[in-house]
View: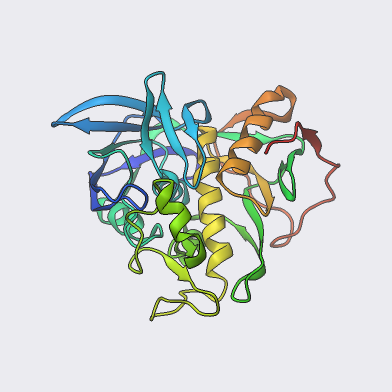
Length: 313
């Protein structure tokens, strides 16, 4: 497949499951779309597409425990990060994502079933050239102990670090160059996770009503409750990278840059995107062939110190 052309699905892809926070059943259908459509979410009510929202940072309505898209009337669809990661990870540029519930189904807690559905549908080239968002200079956001930064890089690279005061997690770090092969192998199967100590608080706040051992890594005081264990030794940080990829896809075009995140999450990912677009000198749009990396795998030239955006909490 040529990197220089936009893509869409050959035919529609379908999945069904429960929303991890709402607990409501949901059917999701990804339809092919024309060039320059981008990714558009459609909320299906009684068989009709009642509301549409583009998957861009301007549509973000909330980032508490999940990324929510909305419009002037309020939220349209929540927990979009995993399906967005699958579309971006497999280099799908254009699609109409139809869902008949307020939340995207969580499935097994990862992007793996979205990948399977997209693979079954197939991905095809369109005639229009792909446009990339190239990072021209570092832009960073600090929020307490959390820090996120986008900087120039020929390709898309994620450098994610987490730090949880729990003996089963602690400090984990992952650096990965994203393409369809690395995404399938290293990120797609990483599941969301939660702590038994947080369950009562989350339920009281209206979250995690659909969470279970079938869709969440559940971390107890000193052990995992999932009998099958982990899919990767460092599955926790890999899932944070998966989330970051989905959130960064709200840039509206594939990013050519490296994203570094320390102690981050949906809110920080969104804040970094917002800071980037607030500085028109930090990015540009380029068209055509994805550049070939000229340095060794994972090697970066020294980048200038990032310009900090205002602190976010």
